[in-house]
Image (tube, rainbow, N blue to C red; front, side, top):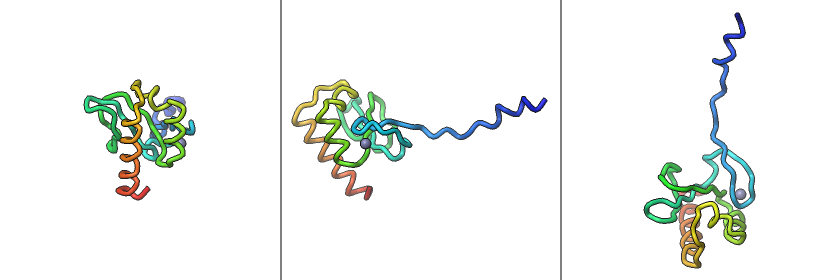
Length: 101
Ligand SMILES: [Zn+2]
């Protein structure tokens, strides 16, 4: 009889994502989502924009590692041009200032 209870004991699921810079896994809320969506590659503060996404910590080291190794381009399936790289670094800095990470 008591075996029936098992199903109701499910824990609330916290989504986990991996940072493509340092490969650490952590709660989704702590990572920044970059999306390759209809409007091109951009940072997605809502985490819900349609498109192919990649996750990164807010640390510049993670961004640099992901950019250097081509991990970001690979994850988003884009060609990493110097312009795009510049844009992403700028957006990251803006985000950092806004959100006070
Ligand atoms: Zn990281």
